[in-house]
Image (cartoon, rainbow, N blue to C red):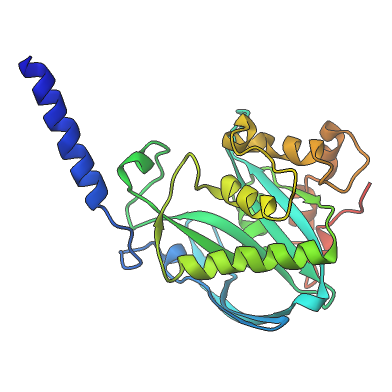
Length: 271
């Protein structure tokens, strides 16, 4: 009987502590996560302050650089789904959305875990509310080169099927979420608030036939491209295995590392 009460006491203390935790914008963030984007909307024009475009020397050494850019929704022209598997294991990956515009602007939106100095990711520590989530706005010269050229992870960049109206709504949706998180912090959650589950929430806003958030491939995101393929969202006639090989852009990213038209050069023709 005493053991029962001790357990109840421990559980009660844990939940009191857990509910007392609050997310914050003010911590000792690592250099790469210090600055969040600032976003303003004016009709079809969107201004983003602090688009990240670090110049990477090694994975741990980079020259910080941010710039400001305007994006015209009337000029949005395409969408790419980027998948970066972390290993040969068939589950860990990072996923992102890259939008491109007819005036040759490219911008990537990525839900990320915001790290403090000395902090490393543990997929189970979300239970203790140890991490905040952020939306980072990237230049492809930073995001893709970091992953494909510096880390040498596999990077797949799939062209997606979407109408112009869908692209506009999706872009506005992810930017409004980014703007909200830059002002109202939230905790990261390994189950329902990750890079891939965040993308799914935005995509489902545009769909009548919702993609199930409980599909296991959402939680093992190296296979999330299979969901997109099955839903006819990838703009290709190739099989999935053929598409995975065809849209792996590592060789192109290395070849055109210093090319001024890097983003155009790493995109392969649709098949």
